[in-house]
Length: 386
Image (tube, rainbow, N blue to C red; front, side, top):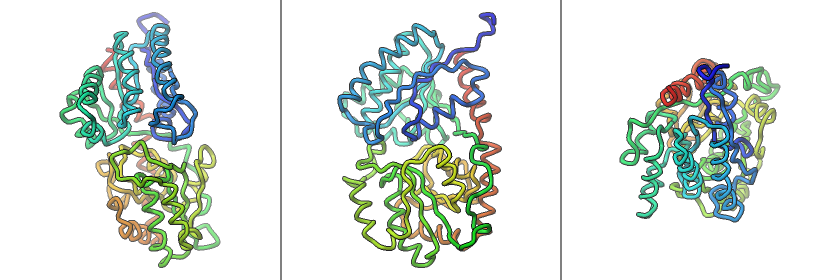
């Protein structure tokens, strides 16, 4: 291959699972996407394979990685000569400082820098920062060539911080075929009338898990055949979404709620699930719910849709600009009565569940697949490498 026809190199500086949270999962999808056909994707896996509770902590291990990984990045840039360094932008202090070090190293060596904004609350992080940190944030932001956001409505979080002309929107994409296949226990095929409601995410207040548990008695008092399945890691303290009024101890709050017999008898905790276990959970569910307080574009919603599930969710991030009421029943964050009403509506109407599920599977397969995702990203990378 001649120099003229060599694929441009992109160094992806981002973790892959475990743990199975937003940045890790989206990086995995990115590296598996057809983007590899046009660009040479190099990967610097900055994952530490530690418990999710350690994210955002200033402990000795995190400090060690914070000192060593920028040095490794400098070595990789000198060795591999990528044209673009692609990394993330966090909205908490520890995460921002970590990714800022990668941005500054890339700029030191004259590389183009593209950052993927995973959250939706950067303006809250900036507003709460002391003066010295605000100045540092503005300096780091000025070093970034392009920001990738997962919805047009998310651009406003950078108002007055980053030029709007540097923002690009790329909707998330997954491999829908991974979740395709016959359902495991749909109502029309099952021998009983059990309806399974699935939640996938951190078991924290910010993700809506505590609100969902509070809703259980409201639902089972009218529909005792319902079974709630909660999949995800238990967080003692939520550190990723710091501008939500989280309880001091999520685990203690959940333990207190489980003293209620109605909740304890109708809830199953699946733990952190991945691979076939995760796919099986989606296929065995009848309804998916994510009553979160803050999201950008939750990948789990796309996974649930690809599995043919109707969705109940809060109108957060890019969801309301992309999906209408035919795909998602929207409920206000923290409104347990609204959550119960939405779930009961779907529980009592199997045909509505099937209709929404078919539509969701069709939409994800057509518009939110890895091919579409790769095409959107390729346009941005071409912009910087042409």
